[in-house]
Length: 255
Image (cartoon, rainbow, N blue to C red; front, side, top):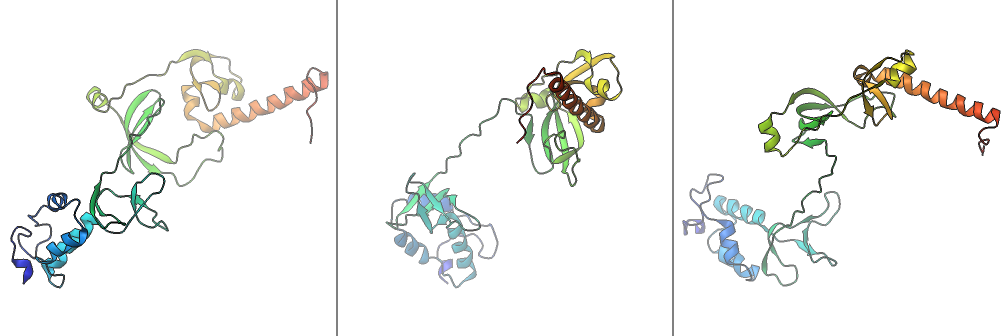
C-alpha cells in the first residue's frame, strides 16, 4: 500500500495522534506553490481508501483551509459563509481562492481594553476574581434563576457567589491587582433614618445605586433599602405637591 512507502509521514498506521511528520513544517516549506502540486505530492504517499490515508488526509483538512473568501474592505481572509455559525478569520494555512496558491495568515488578536473600574475577572463559567468593597476575592459562583422584584435597586448581576476567599499578596502580584479599600465615613444612615426614624451617627459608605450614605447592615438588606427608596419617592412627591400648592415651584406640565 502506498501509505507504507515513506516512514517520515507516519509512525504506526493505526494509532491516533502518533504522527511523527510535522504538518506545519511541511506546509511552511511549500508556501507559494500551487495547492494542486502539493496535493499531488502527498497523494503519492497516502491513499484515501486506506485507514492510514484517511487519518492523514483528515489532518490535512484540519491544517489547511481550502474554502475561504477575502473581505473587500480589509483584505482579510475568512472561512465560512455566514449563516447560523457566521464567518471567522483564517488562522494558519489556506488555499488562495483566486490563484490556488498555498498561503499563510496569522490572525491578529487585538488586546482587550481594560476599563479603569474593572471589578471582575472571569476565569471560567464557575470561577472568577471579583473586587468587593475594594478587596479582591477568589469567588465560585452559580447563575441566578430568579430575580428580586426590586429591579431598580438590585445590581446588574446574573450570578450568586457561593464561596469566596481573599487573595493573598502573591496572588495579587501574580494577577497585577491592587486592593483599594473603600472609605467609610461617620454619617447618618439614610435607610435607617427613613425606615426607623433613627438619626444615630454610624460608619456609612456611599452607595451608587441608592445615591445615599448607608451603614453596613443596611447595605446587605435589600428589603430595607427598597422600603427606604419607596418612602423617599413618596416624600419627594409630597414635597413637590406642597411647593406647587404654595406657589414656590411652577406647576408641572400634564400632557
